[in-house]
Structure formats: C-alpha cells, structure tokens
Amino acid sequence: MKLLKKVHFLLIAFLIINSVNAQDKPISTKEEVTGKINGATITIKYGSPSVRAREIWGKLVPFNQVWRAGANDATTFETDKDLIVAGSKLPAGKYSFFIIPNDKQSIIIFNKEAKQWGAYKYKEKEDQLRVVVKQEKTKSKAEKLVYTINKNTISLKWDNWNIPISVK
Image 1 (cartoon, rainbow, N blue to C red):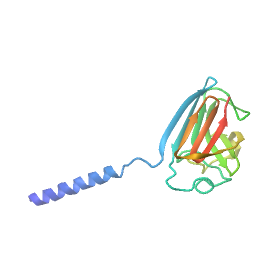
Image 2: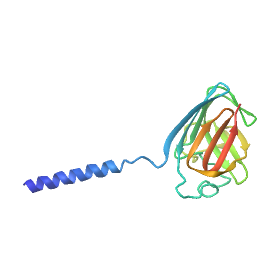
Image 3: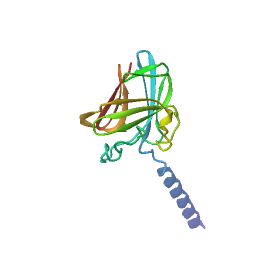
Image 4: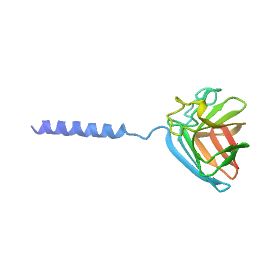
C-alpha cells in the first residue's frame, strides 16, 4: 500500500512539473514603447520576434507583401495628437501598423482597424495613411525587433535593417 501511494505521489509530482515547464514564455515577447514627439504622446505595442539564425528580409518577411511589423497581433500605433509622418498628416488615434518592405524602400501603413491578428484580415480600404521610406542597412545586427521613439523619428530595428520614419 505504501508503495502504491509513493507511485501516485511521484506520478502527480511529474505531471505538475511537466505542466509548469510547458508554460514557458513565448518566443516573441510582447513589448510597448512610449515617447513624445513635439508634444504628442506616441505608444507602440508589438510582438518582438528574434532572428534566431533565420534570414529575415526577403525570406521570413517576404518582399512586396503586407507584414504586421512584429509578431502575433498586428503592431498598434497610438497618438494623442495629429502628426506629420514622412510629410503626410496622420490624425490622432489608434491604428494597426503594417509595412510592405522591398530591397530598396518600405511602405509604412497606418490602418484604421487597430485590433487585428497578424495581417490576415488586413483591408487596404481601411488605410488611414501610407508613406514610403528608405530603410538603412546596419553594420551591427539587432537580434530582437525593437521600436524606438526619438526626437523626430520612430525607428524599427531588426536584423541588419533600421527603418526610420520622420515624425513632426
């Protein structure tokens, strides 16, 4: 009888430990960055994937296709004041944020439907603003995707690319 209780106890302990280990953090962490540009508060929420020895631009993120600009849920971009983004007006609000990259430039998209999973249900007719920017190749690689909000720019850095977007 004691042996049977010990076996049951060990089995339960094994199942609990296995369950806890299965609850590891997701590979792509949820991130949020907030900053100010010319008095406007900007918040970007995104999933931050890692390179993990993969070829990113043109492969994992195909050229000339809409990309969610992060992992999992579509990236969201929120501003409490109107902005001028790469020379065009973006009204205050919350948007999903997409990118269509190619080897020479990227199309930046602010879409009125803020709550989306990936880019699977993306609708071009819901775009509030599209602008074209030139990405920069960097010497150093960024393992995790990261957004930064600077004095007059927002940047997406991942792998060997930096995509700067001028904001006023």
